[in-house]
Amino acid sequence: MNAIEVEKLRKTFRVQRNREGLKGAFQDLFKREYSEVMAVKDISFAIPQGEICGYIGENGAGKSTTIKMLTGILVPTAGSLKVQGYVPHQEREAFVKHIGVVFGQRSQLWWDIGVIESFRLLRKVYRVPEQDFNRRLNELIERLSLQELLNRPVRKLSLGQRMRCELVAALLHQPEVVFLDEPTIGLDIVVKAEIREFLLHMNKEYGTTILLTTHDLQDIEALCSRVIMLDDGNIIYDGSLDTLKSTWGKGREVRLQFAKPMELSELHQLTAELPVTWEAASKLEASVYVPKELNVSDVIGLIVGQASILDLSIHETNTDDIVREIYKTGSASAPAVEMLQRSQEAEYVSMGERSIIDSGAVNPQDADIAAAPVDKTSENGHASGEPAAETAGREFAGVGGRTSASEGKSDE
Ligand SMILES: Nc1ncnc2c1ncn2[C@@H]1O[C@H](COP(=O)(O)OP(=O)(O)OP(=O)(O)O)[C@@H](O)[C@H]1O
Image (tube, rainbow, N blue to C red; front, top):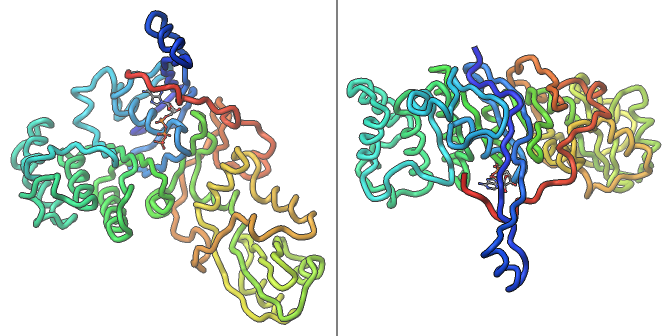
């Protein structure tokens, strides 16, 4: 069974337009003008039980609006959605018992009372039996090391401490589906790691389905097997992180420093038979990108046997770079491979323009990432983790011509 089902979901906001100047402000008093902002444009996806799915996109892409519809806070303009079999905005009272929500920028705890009091209040809100509550609370307190914090008022907690308490608050009633909107925002690296580990545990132990919105792509790498990418209200990618990396990643990068100047044509000759890609920063420095199917050490061996190398290092493409590349080109339809082939035609590619940045990792790509479910291309035309050749050339409605909603937000 799918935990979340979304079909042609749309949300349009009506926003007031302010006319310019004093005269305009005066006119606004008598006759208001409105325009429409379509924040979510007929998107469709389904998330099976127990999956952790990353929901990513640039600012204003429509992530929060989707989460608000999925949690019943906003009513969709069109389309349908179901979460754990419920229509969120229609069956809110029964529905909320099945979901947990953490909005990283907002608190669901009472500011001035002790943390434990907030938890007790939430027990009543969700009508959790006392015994279940105590067992669950003890488990969460231990997992997130909250013993010391329970009697402190929320306003006295650090951001990291508060976020750990927010997670407990969202999970006390043991929901099957959890929505996390920027749960690690502003946290230091240690707390981020703790929270990620905790979420993975919850998912493994209880099969909790998690939809995670984040700008921190390390969250995605650590937690998600699947990624849905939004751009201007449209889904531009829905598929496994694995496929995203292999379709868009240029492969592992071997950076080389030569003892004597090398022309790009000479570099190509070094690896003549291999499907690798070269980028040169200067005649003394270049990078070779090795696709997943090749062995990095074989490629290095071939090069070292023919050229005099002063230094070399191996780097893996990280998700940040891939996503940045997709946004830069504005569409998931033109895979990196294609762009590289184009760039090979140029004599030298500036290293400053490279999208692959040192991640410090040398492990084979994606070794620990689980395969995602079968992907499909939806009617609104998003790439669904298909191979590069199949997606190439397809147009996506979400690209270009962004809607500006800067005129002001209406309250739903
Ligand atoms: N209540 C509202 N009234 C009018 N417009 C809105 C409202 N809420 C969101 N919008 C607009 O809808 C679009 C999508 O906003 P949304 O907050 O969903 O984006 P987001 O992807 O969550 O962005 P961020 O990463 O900045 O949180 C934006 O153009 C935004 O200005």
